[in-house]
Amino acid sequence: MTNKNKTEWRAIAARVTGILVILTGVLLAARVCVASPPVDHPIPSIFDSHSTPADSIRHLSHFVLGITGLIFLVVFSLLSYAVVKFRNRVADSKREPAQVYGSTQIELAWTIIPILIVVVLFLATARVIHAIQDAPKPAEAVEVTAIGHQFWWEFRYRGLGVVTANELHVPVSDPSHPTPTFLKLLSADTDHSFWIPQLAGKTDLIPNRVNETWLDPHETGLFLGQCAQYCGTQHAKMLLRVYVDSPEDFKVWARGQQQPANEDEKEAAGRRVFERTACLNCHAINGTSGTGRFGPDLTHLMSRNTIAAGAALNTHENLRLWIQNPDAIKPGSLMPAMKLSDAELDALVRYLETLQ
Image 1 (cartoon, rainbow, N blue to C red):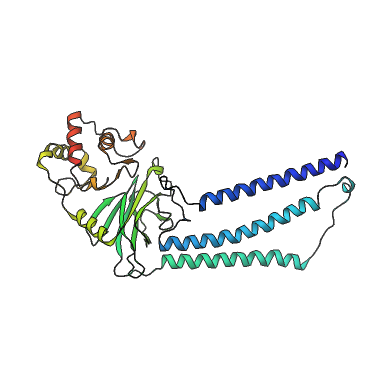
Image 2 (cartoon, rainbow, N blue to C red):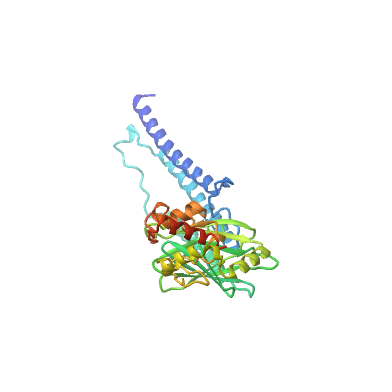
C-alpha cells in the first residue's frame, strides 16, 4: 500500500471514529435520561412517570425518539457508506464525479418521506396535547389555584379554604375512583413555568392570563419540580415539592391546614414582633393583623419541610438565618433583612415555630 493510500485510509478512519464518538455520546446521554436515578439523589425525569399526563408524554417521547433514532441510523449508515465509497482518490483527482440529473424517483422519495414523517409526528403530538388539555374534570377533582411569585409558589385550594406555599399536597388517584387535581395557573409578576417532570408537562404562568394543568398521580410519595421559565435572579431556586398522599392522609392534612393559627400565650412576645414590624405587610397569619400576600402565608409554617421555596430545610437554624439575612440562603430574593435585635429575632423564631 502506498503512502498516499495510507493517508486516505487514515483520513477515513478519523472521520468514521469521529462519527462513532458522537453516536456513543448520544447513546450515553439517552442512557442517563432513561436510567432510574439513585434513591438518595432523586433526579426528576420524564422517563419515570407516575401520573396519567406524564405517562402520555413519556409514551410520545419514546415514539418520537424511536422514529428520530431510526432516521439517525439511516443517515449515519448512508454517510459512512459515502465516506468510504466516494472518498477522494489520487487517480480520480482530475475527474468530475458522476452527476445525477432529474431523477424523479429520488426527488419524490426525499420529498414524500419527510412529509409523511412530519405528518405522523404532528398527529401523534396533537393527539396527546388534546388528551391532556381537554381532559374532562370529574366531580371529585381537587381544585387548586397556583400563583407564581418571584420566587415562590402560592397554592389556594378552592372549596377547602386552605392556603399554603411551595409544597403542594394532592391525593393519590385510584384508577377505579379517579381523584385528579386540576390547577389554575396565574402569575403575580412575570412569566413562570410550572413543571413536575414525573407528574405533568410544563405549563407557563403568564401575567393577565389563566392557564390550566392537571395531575393524576398513581402512587404516593414526594415528587420534585421547579419553575422552568427564567423569571429573575433566583429562578433556579424557585423549587416546589408535590406530596402525593393517600386519601385519608390528604384529608388529615387538609383538616390541619383549616385550623386557626396556634395562639400560644407563652410566645406572645414573638407575635408582637411580627405584628409591629414589616413582617405583617408581606405575610399573613390567621388570627393576627397580618394579611399580606406578597410573601407566603405563615399560618402553618412548621407543617412544611422546607423554607425559601425549597432552598433550605425548615430547621431552627435555617429559619433564624432566613429572617436575619435572606441573601445568605437565597441571594437576590425579594425578602428584606429585618434588622432585628438578637432578642427580637429569637422571640420571633420561637413564635413561628409554634405555627403548626
